Image 1 (cartoon, rainbow, N blue to C red):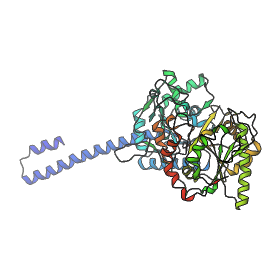
Image 2 (image 1 turned 90 degrees about the vertical axis):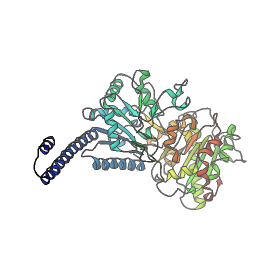
Image 3 (image 1 turned 30 degrees about the horizontal axis):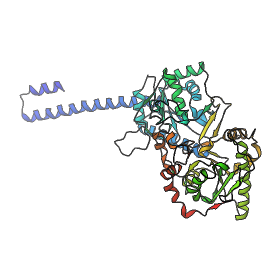
Image 4 (image 1 turned 120 degrees about the vertical axis):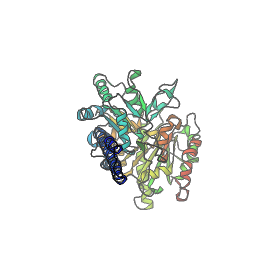
Length: 502
């Protein structure tokens, strides 16, 4: 271009010839720019391809048919997006297929097998839930930002007050400890994974219980201040973006019913109570969600016709309640058979077992059940784990948030699950018995074992579309919680309810 302009300045020929040369010089200039842009774009594309090719994604999945399909669909969407923007694809694992470990949802059991396969090829691993949405192009920038660093990255949550689900950790200042919002996904670089794997090979895990895998994983990585803290990154979002200005690499997809709501006549509610709570806890149940159901039974250690309650014949215990719970399941099975005989036909497909201080939305239960097949053996709720670091442990549904059981499974539970003692923890023993029966529990983050104030605001925001339940009346107003979270949705059910307190 410079030579062209020098030549132009020396010209003494006619103006027409000068114009031709000017046009030639300008064209040559833009050709040079075009070639530079092409080279730059080609270089950027190669970098994008490299980042995508070096990324490993693990979708934390479940074997249940609904969740299996969601995980497979998410993997296909990731591949389709990759094919549109790149000549490379990331590696995408479906956890229950590729790493069938009872504790895969707690993440640490996945580290060693992931490194065995990907240590020399991957820059890091992105962990997603089956309802997480991923923008692969934007996440490639996240990969580049933290490449070759020891990093643990995600949307940082913190407790607002000391929480029972986190064993009241950091009670002096609960806001100071950060843990990732699982619904938004989180990222660990290979450098961090290698350090964690060394620790896992040298140290024994101190706890047998798993409650909140995000908090427990962050604690292990933090290692009492000697490890790595979570890096907050705003491109991990807690809700879907509301406009183009919000650049989300990941975000949780809001729950959507899979079909029209389940009929109320298909669901039987069993409330577990005892005499000392008839006056206060059952009053709350009967003034909030119970009027919106069709079939409900209150099971107690004392018969009270004014409610009415059923004396299940098992004395109340201060802990465990195993014999009481399984007596309720046996009674409910017979009761359901009687109802169906009287009404003609098999209509009740689900049993919802709750405590007398469970606060729930009937409408949201009905919406959630549209996604599950009652002909499958299903126990649905919030998952906890016991001894799941190894294959010898088992998962169970924690009872306070509610346990939903497909009617199909009830006969097996009534026949095969015999409590070791009346005081054995009922929810844990149910999980143990399900393992013996070869039935996997089904987890949903829409159930909650504790009160709303025991959870981070960001966590609740990610699941607020169809929150099913909370638990406990301790130091809160349960009626206010119901009105805030559930009343509006349940009022829409009124026209469908033909209420029967059995």
